[in-house]
Amino acid sequence: MADSSEGGVPPAPVVQPTVNHRIKLNVGGKLFETTSSTLQVGGHDSLLAALSSRHAIENDEREPIFIDRDPEIFSTLLSLLRSGRLPSAARRRFSKQDLAEEALYYGIEGRLRSALSPPPLMGINATLASTIVPAAEAHPTALYAGSDDGSIWIAHGGQISAYDSNLIHSGTVRTHLEDIASLRCIWPEIAAIGSLQTPGLHLYDVSSGRQVALVNWSDPSDPRVYKARVTAIGATEPGYNGRRHIFAAFECPHRENCILSVDRSTLQIVSEIGRLSGSGSKTSSPGKLVDLTEVGGGVVFASAVSSGAFGYSGYMRLWDPRTGKAVWETSEPGSGVRSDRFGDSFADVDVDRKEMAIYKVCWKSGDLAVADMRKLSEDPWLYLEERSAALRSAGGGTNSIVSCYNGQVFVSRESGLEVWSRAEEESEEGEGDAQRKKIWRRNFVDREDDAKRGLIRGMEAGGDRLFVCRSGVEGVEVWESSNFSGAICLF
Image 1 (cartoon, rainbow, N blue to C red):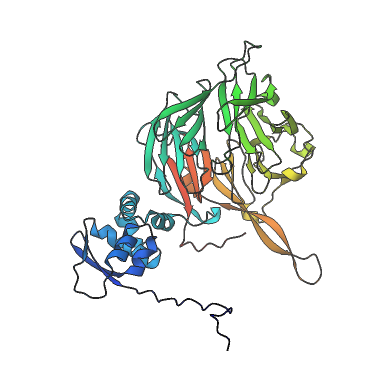
Image 2 (image 1 turned 90 degrees about the horizontal axis):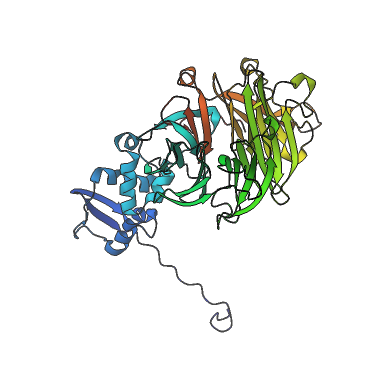
């Protein structure tokens, strides 16, 4: 046999087995016994891992390590390290804030956050988990839940209240605005807000409570352009791409309007997009902006809708910020809509950025329709049908709101909240192996008693949570799926 030390393969290093020491702890006068491997589950940077590496013992003769903290909560956190989940009784005994403060002390807040995070949101089995009620002027006027961690910012009475991933209140900022109608996050801790009463796009640091910038629309060649208010804000999430711009729709007192592209880093105006007179419903200022520049061929989606004695009317447009021109648009009533759909304009619309699809709900019929953004035409709408006769009657779409999240479409109605989700079923067509095709299923999310609390006027989803606010009702409802639900996912 060749000697590996002479030009051959070097010998493999001898790996010493890890010794799993027993550790004794005295937490607040109560004795605990565990192992070093259990304490190290929290991560190498945690306090418990440091204690286990410095004070590991193999006998019972050494004094237990003393920690002057709450023993009951420590017992819960120790169970978390042992099993990877919290005991069910702990959720009833301790508040999330108490658990979070102790987990932060021990350096295992990441473990606790994972244990407290809700399962993937499925509208079919979502239930009302909690309600967030700000301390003052608690009627929400705008929501932002775009982060993936389940946190939320709530605008209420000119204030912004922030709640972390555990829905623990992390601070409230009082702005100089009386009412906030638009709210988006452009950098971590930096909010872009707009008001229908106060001119300008305002940037606030929600951690320090100070205003960091103000953007106004002005035109030296047109003195009519002044005191322009913000009607909508579109911006990708802060971690998506920091180089992307902020898009804000501005409207002057005489209704002339445009969309401004603002550099996210310098907060300087880059360009003016789509200046319109605002003299009619087809030229009014957008009420919704969705930034698709990263995923949708470099475009921005804009829509406006208005209602009156004769129903709803509005438009949708895709703007190219590079040219300042619309690359696709449709208006309702009109714009090639089939004769059997004329007069059944959309009441609300939303964009699924991942699926590259536009969803609208019609005000008269209440029907939900989808358009593939990669195949837009004069009339690109596919109207979804529920095959179950018991669920087919949706009611009208007056005051309805549409919100897309993770391949699901949530639709609020005066009668309640529903969700549309995709499913697969076998088709009789094809030879050999059965062919499968996509179908849509409609299910109710809330119960009749939930709908009686009030009309849904705001809806945002993020971090596997659905946040809902209702007209005339204080606070924001938090809807989550349950790990113990017996429902079966349809998609």
